View 1 (cartoon, rainbow, N blue to C red):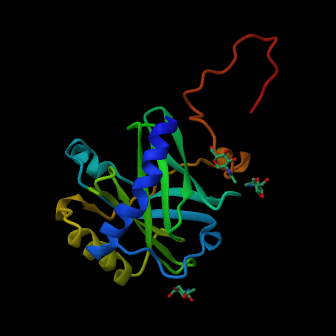
View 2 (cartoon, protein in one colour):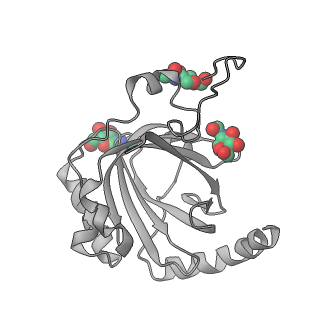
Length: 213
Ligand SMILES: *[C@@H]1O[C@H](CO)[C@@H](O)[C@H](O)[C@H]1NC(C)=O
Ligand SMILES: *[C@@H]1O[C@H](CO)[C@@H](O)[C@H](O)[C@H]1NC(C)=O
Ligand SMILES: CC(=O)N[C@H]1CO[C@H](CO)[C@@H](O)[C@@H]1O
């Protein structure tokens, strides 16, 4: 693991220069991650994975909370309705030397991935590109809004960026239905805490256990 990280850190300046050379994806200028703090809705998602294709019509506008962390990175918590109830997914994005460029370890795929904030005006939207692997195969483009709906211009900007990165029309999603998660009670409990998957955690059955939440 340590080796994996060491190798990765050596590769970043090199891959970053490749990235800027092809000029497709540039991080936001004068990026300030503190200003990203707070609630966002993912109103657009471009995702070309063949195994995801069958879920395209199930994608909803889901809610997320961004919390800048002490290390200069940002933590993201997202909520999604699933057959088991509301699920949360938490990500800790570590900063790199390039403002607006973050890395994180994907537990699902067991590899480091990286994220570039391409554009944001902080009070209205964020446009983010995510990579599948170190070879910079584009994996996802996301458009986040402070509200559920964004100006058509911004939707168009997101679509054009996705198309220019090689995403197919069919993979560019702008759902209209809103994910009901987090439900009111979960929201009240506390939205900023990166929680584990709450609904599938077995509750203690023994009466000697005090209730915890
Ligand atoms: C961000 O996430 C990391 C890893 O889960 C955690 O250790 C840290 O406390 C979180 N920071 C904030 C500000 O939520
Ligand atoms: C972001 O866009 C909104 C809507 O157009 C505008 O009201 C706001 O001033 C912009 N913010 C910045 C920092 O430019
Ligand atoms: C909804 C809610 O109660 N949110 C709180 C979660 O915890 C943070 C930090 O302790 C508070 O600032 C929020 O108000």
